[in-house]
Length: 159
Image (tube, rainbow, N blue to C red; front, side, top):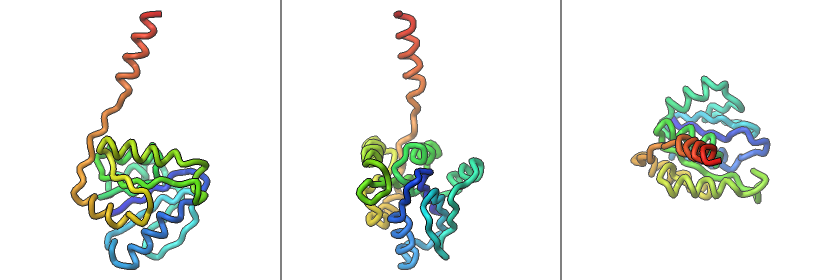
């Protein structure tokens, strides 16, 4: 199963769902697709689309998914990476009215550079990314929380 996560941002991200729909219609995607669409209005007879999932259901869907296809938001990306899932991330872009700026481009580039995700620039690259996800082994997630706490302790002890 493919789980598409568009997050909770108030602007729509129809480009990703349009491309997924096209891939379903063309037979490129043959497995079940579930989408958490947020504020993106979209209808499809081929996908199960829900605007917002309760926390437990969201967690369960992440667990059951073979691959996660996400917008470039850190929460959605990190959730998939922590679960060891192949994550394909595509940034929402300002020029398409999907976000207020293009910061998601930097987020996707950073997570890709560390080997955590498959980053794509545009939904048109989704088909190739899905092929890559079949053998992609994401780098394990390592929290920086302990390092930050150590830095804070060191600073407090010096003051």
